[in-house]
Amino acid sequence: MHVQEWLDTVPAAAVYALVGLIIGLESLGIPLPGEIVLVSAALLSSQHGGVNPVVLGVCATAGAVIGDSIGYAIGRKGGRPLLAWLGAKFPRHFGEGHIATAERSFEKWGMWAVFFGRFVALLRIFAGPLAGVLHMPYWKFLIANVLGGIAWAGGTTAVIYYVGVVAESWLKRFSYLGLVLAVLIGLTSMLIIKRKAKKMQGAAREAEPEAATVPAAAE
Image (cartoon, rainbow, N blue to C red; front, top):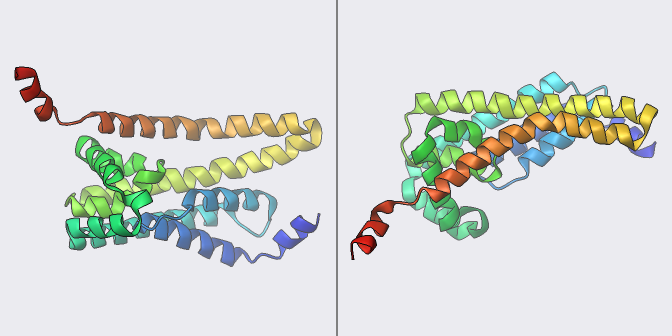
């Protein structure tokens, strides 16, 4: 009860601004928990009448699209030296292995890497800067960026919001059973998209250049 009363005091504008800022910075290339923040805010909107899920989804989408676009511009201007600098500053997220995996994803899937990259933490951080470094045509990047931002930010907000609403209703009737069922049903669509994105990333990782193996076989 005390928690709910505290949540009711949180200004909706602060929630919108925080979500848009965190997601924007993550999309720009800074390792931040954008998805966790978005999920938490969407759950809050289902319990907090002052936080409108539609406005929340719009702010999250705007942050994702704008952040990715800025990241693209920075990557295009900074080029490979930028990736090397990021690798030195954030080796856990921008190590050579991660960069190579993300780059193979882009080379293999192009625009789809930007779109589905929204649903994979690694590619979500890399998408903007790496697309700029690789000089992907901006119109292609923008289309994939906008559609991916809407699908990820808007879709996540909608799914988690309705999970929270349904869970609260079912919880009153069926206790924890209702909560479990609501979560399973609500997250199914997100898991399907995430699995598709991870398969795409795994396929790109396995698509190593065969040039190194051909000479060995010839010997």
